[in-house]
Length: 128
Image (cartoon, rainbow, N blue to C red; front, side):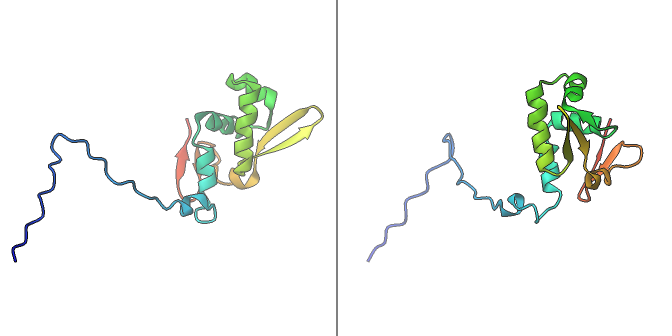
């Protein structure tokens, strides 16, 4: 009995070969208890949210103050404030018709006295 060898594999030369899709395990990334810094890092990944946090490190401000200082629309300030609030970085307090935003005490504890660095435990950030 004669066995024919398997045909040679086609050459990859000149052909676009797409590698198989990798399946990533995102369970550690989607579970905040796996990494307590994750909500902070996600919230601070946007430049506008960084700008809001830097302004609030000095003093609590109203939404209107942030709009004026940062040159952002009221909608964008509110949208970014919601993300920061959900991450536990800021708190919102209504006083009459104004909403004051301030840094949470837990987040403030990671800021050094000169307010130039922020330590989250897993990493440290330096501000301008």
